[in-house]
Image (cartoon, rainbow, N blue to C red; front, side, top):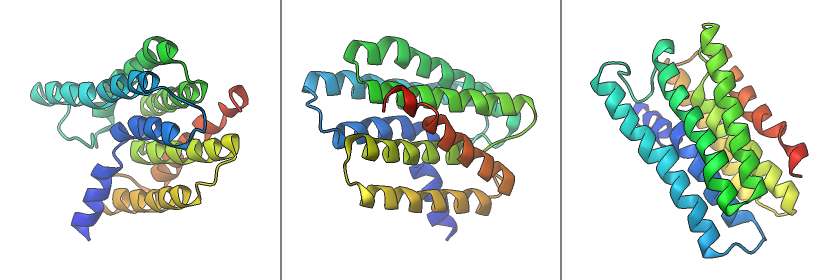
Length: 201
């Protein structure tokens, strides 16, 4: 059980949520997306949200500012959040405008808002669950895409709901978070995406 739940924490790590949402968009959208547009979004987003954060983590870990990939310490969490917010803004201002897809743009607006909200809570000495924020953001984004494009993605939504339960269980089992931190992370993820829909639906 311990191995399974730890694997869940890695599979649904917050770093993987942006690229998962990007791939989901191009899989779900009925709009024609030329390969140049898809690669122009997917490749830079993968580099900026997965590769570069991993490099920064290795640097921060090497100089002793971060000790674990799950950054359990509230103080340590600030550094990855600073980096993620900057990278999200780079995507919003440099990557997506060059290969414009409005639904993807506001997905990253929601992710940026969620990261800022999580950072503000850290300054208030509250450590919300970034895992829950990430998976909840993806779930709400999929719901919005399903409604927007009138596409039946029940299986994907069901699997994502299952993932939400598994992630919550894994974080509680590992004692990385308590109940309120899990719930607040979930709420941040859901509402950060929900509040953007009036701009693109």
